[in-house]
Length: 343
Image (tube, rainbow, N blue to C red; front, side, top):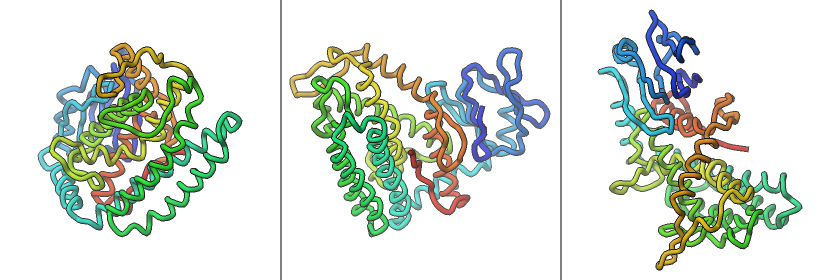
């Protein structure tokens, strides 16, 4: 159970939520895990199976407190909200801003700043922990370049220019990604990012984890009432969750990339669990996918200190925290969107 910016997050899978007078009560079997005054909350996000009492759902609807249900694996299920709750106004603001070039540039600049900053610190972490096993001068040079690109983002006059700078930074980062791979270089070498289809084992792992992260981001956006399909940096396309792709950018390197590197460097992935199709696509077998899903769920339970909120949260909560901060910015409660800056 954790409270962020007046939103209560219930992460105990077997917890049950009930109303006791003016309080939300979180129960597990015969024990009371917590008690929070309902009037202090704007939202409740529950990652549990038992659910909530009808009395609590009615009280939330009556008082304008959003009550969102997710599975413990972070799949969005449903939302209970009152008749005058501001989700419509929030989405209207989102749609209006998505048509405003200046607003799109402002938000996109923060997103790219977070992405490039985190790419730099993935490299810096490797230099700190494994300088003797890598080409340290090469990595330091790319880290220096990424710092320079961060300084150039403020000068980007439009989103297209910003996208170009993001692509340049990504090219530099992935240009040394192979240096970050320390285990079984013969089986897990990396010569550049390839997608649709992935052309080597590393790209297959990255694409799979990026798909998981996109799903997490989309669910988090649904939870705060935003439309995952209307983005600010990624253009709208039928069937593409553009805002989810926006939101996940700053989390790719510290969460997905480091997860893949950890799997390879700890020799937790068997090269024999991949196959190559006629078109060159490298595919994972079902057993590996299941193992990755289990590992991903474990990774999401690890904790970190959120750089803006200055609270200990799990990695699985990061997309929800960032979605909440973005919604607060769109509502005018924050004067800027604070990107997730990991270090």
